[in-house]
Amino acid sequence: MKNTLIAPSVLAADFGNLQRDVEMVNNSAADWFHIDIMDGVFVPNISFGMPVLDAIYKHAKKTIDVHLMIVDPDRYIQTFKDLGADVLTVHYEACTHLHRTLQAIRNAGMKAGVAINPHTNVALLEDVIHQLDLVCIMSVNPGFGGQSFIENTYKKVAQLKEIITRNNANVLIEIDGGVTDKNAKQLVETGADVLVAGSFVFNAADPITTIQNLKNITTL
Ligand code: DX5
Ligand code: ZN
Image 1 (tube, rainbow, N blue to C red):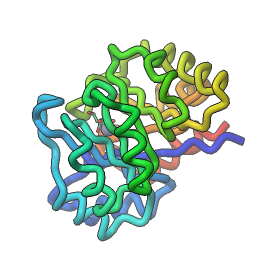
Image 2 (image 1 turned 90 degrees about the horizontal axis):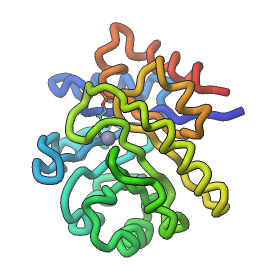
Image 3 (image 1 turned 45 degrees about the horizontal axis):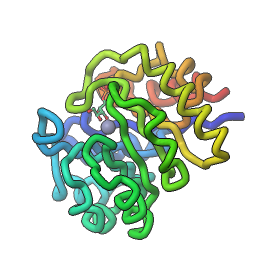
Image 4 (image 1 turned 180 degrees about the vertical axis):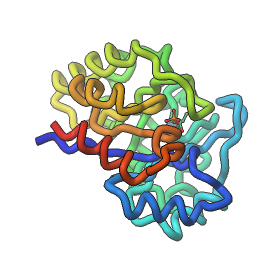
């Protein structure tokens, strides 16, 4: 049986009630907290930074999956380790020396992830596949929650799955952006292991039930 990991994106939480929303995730069927850090340079938006992650960490009881949408992420690897990150994902497009960056993340004691924008071909990851614990395929252009899912993502998931299998690598495929109950099952059938969901979860009338439904429809 395939147990898909569900990672609610805290970007879509109510920041005025952050502790309440973190505890909702603790009490749900979700597996991870997905934390979006945006710098206003790599992406055209600024989300939140270290003090807010520190506040989330104080209440969060699940794996902390940090998605860095920032330039020059090497400067902050140890900082995010100290803030409680379990998985640290950097953007392919933001790393000149990706191989070195991934090694530094693992050396700091975290799982190493790389995120790719919708225009970036998954084949570019083949030469670092054994340095990776996770690939985050962006199914929207990064920067904002609540955007529509890009259908070309399915093709990328299948291509990446083939690369991982052929190299006998141990890498999770995460999908980030526009995930709903309409595309979740097909994504998992195509090879996805982790589904990030922001607005679909936090804008729902009943987020706990919405998370449970995502979990149910992706348990194959
Ligand atoms: C987008 C972020 C996503 C976002 C997902 O730049 O990386 O994690 O929060 O939000 P939804 O699920 O609303 O598309
Ligand atoms: Zn994200």
